[in-house]
Each structure stands twice: as structure tokens, then as C-alpha cells.
Length: 447
Image (cartoon, rainbow, N blue to C red; front, top):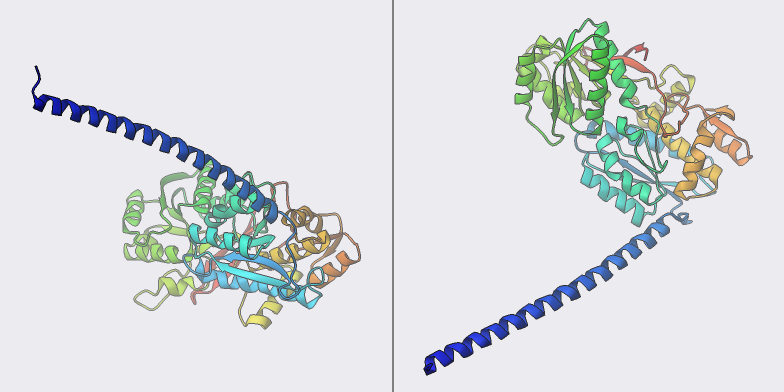
């Protein structure tokens, strides 16, 4: 026979069991309810996204006060900052010419300029702002391949045209961008081959590569290695560095131990200047010849790297490969004179490509008679590719379009013809740093 203590214990166990059962049932009900709420929330979010996309894909409203908005995302600060201001100036120069000749669809062009800081997250924030707040149907940018890739899905998903005048990453060619990504600068697929040819022409039998780890550097490196080896060269070392990196001593030591004839540097001005400083300090600038990509092709680089003990620029004489900017064309000389008169500066790398990007956007929009991104896209090849009346002047081109004439825009940077991927062909030339730190354009390299 159980005593009162046993009875009490039994009651407590029963109470505890009932409490546990109640708690279990309650948790199951809460989980079921939560799942239903989450499902409804997801459905509402999907519905909201679809409605938002449908709204964004419509023709953008034109405000009498604001005019036709064109988004611009460039790297005004960060690793690419030293050269981006000239690119903005080139885009603004073309926009001013458009506005001086009636604007677009009877309204002025309004550039909405955003700084992506050479950071992917900042590029995404900039793109979202241009899409949702400014409702821009087209974005010119971004400066770098990494930041361009960061926003391409966002822009294409919302029916917005992205046209870059500086992005040369090879992976964009075959990327599923719904034919909404174009560029007026040629892909690195050819530039890397030109670089490999230059290396072999200089007699370099072995090479090492040091490249920024993003779509620009990775694609360039792969194409260079394949081309250099196909030409009989041997690549001894390949290093990719983090874009946020600031110290490069270990990378320079690795390169020094490989003892290559030349080092390919694919970089941007901020990190590139630090790399070259470290290479000079450790003697690698003398041990191997350095070949540089156009990503660090800025007059500011010589001062950023600094001087040797005798006061000479450390990088004087270093050379590289860059897309031909069309400097031998009459249209380029006219553009250059306008640029110097407007800003008191010489145009730099990709300035002519940037002017062309804005010009083509204006012509395509005027011909489409629409501010819808996909409509502008549908007319880009029409105004750029043959057939049509060949024209290089923005005013003349807009007048012909308004008369119902078909045009074939002959760009300041070259004869722009967009292929099925939105890419253009290019020619390449050697460039180098003079003793005074300025950039000298050299001979073309056939590809």
C-alpha cells in the first residue's frame, strides 16, 4: 500500500505529463500557424515583387521639371576613384550636347550620378536607388567588372538597360542578361591576347601573374595564361589578391621566388600603387619587367607610387596594353578639343567610350520614342550598327532621327557595332609611363 508521499509523487508525475503534453500540442499549433503565416507572407512578397517588376518595366514617367532621367553609377571613390571623375565628365559632356540640341522627346536629360565606392554592396544600393526612387530606365556603369556584375541581375530583372563604357570582364559576353547588358569597351578576351603577344615580342619566356580577384582580373588572367603558353611561354606563378587587401609583401615575396622574366599586373590604381611600391621596396621591379593592364592607366599613378632616391618616378618606363581610344580619328580630335575647352583637362582612358555610351543611349531613346528600358535596348543596335547614314556628331544624329532617317553612329572611340551579346570589337595599343609620369601611347598590337 502506497503512503501519502507516494500518492503525492504520482499526482505530480501526472500533472507534469499533462503539462508536457499541453506544451507539445501548443508548440505544434504554433509551428503550423507560423508556417501558414510564412507561406502567406511569401506569397504576398512574391506578388509584391511581381507587381513591382511590372511597374519598373513600364515606360518611365517624364516630369516637366526633371526631364528624362539617366542613371550613372561610377567609382568616384575607392580603388578606381582616381580615374572615374574624367569618365563622369565625358558622360556629362555628351548629355550637355544632347540638351543643347532639344534634349530627348522634347525634355532635357537629367543625369542622376551615384558613387559605388568600388564596392559591390554600394553598387547594389546605388542601383536600387536609381530603380526605385529615380525610376531610371537605363544605367551607364559601373566602372569596374565586379561592381557591374553585382548589379546586372537586379537591372535586367527589372527591365532596365545597363551599358558600361569601362567594364571589360570576359564573363559578361555569355552571361544571361536578357540582352539588357551592353558595353562600348571591348572584352578582355582580346586584350589579354594582345598582352601575351607584347610579352613574347619583348623576348620574355617566363611570366607570373598578379591580378585582382574579381571578374576583371580572373578573366584577364585566364586568357593571358592560355595565350602566353600558346605562344611558347611558360607561366611560373599565378596569384589573385583580395580587392580589399592593403599589404602585399607576401605576394611580392612569392613572385620573387619564382624568378619570372615578367610580371603581369591586372589591378586598379589604389591597390596597384601599393603593389608597385612593395615590388620596388623588395627589388622586384628590377628583377623582372612589369606589364600593366589598363585598369591602372592614369596620370595620377606615378605620384601615387612615388619617387626613388634620386627623385625619379619609380614607374617611369613601365608599359602595358590598353584598348585604342580612337585617338587617330577626326571624331576623337573634335571630342578632345571639346573636353579640354569644357574642363581644362586631357581626356583619359575610356573617356571616349563613355561619351559614346551616353550618345548612343540618347539616340536609341529618341528613335524609340520611349523611356522604357527594353524599348531603348531594342533601338541600340539600330542606331549603332549598319546600315544607315554614317554620323559622328550628336546634333546631326538627333536631327536625322527626328526626320525619320536611319543612322549608323560612328563613335568617338571607334566604329561601334554591337554583336549578339552586346559586345564591341576593339584594337589595342602599347602605352607606357614617361619620365615625367605622363602616359605615352605607343604602337598598335595586332590581335
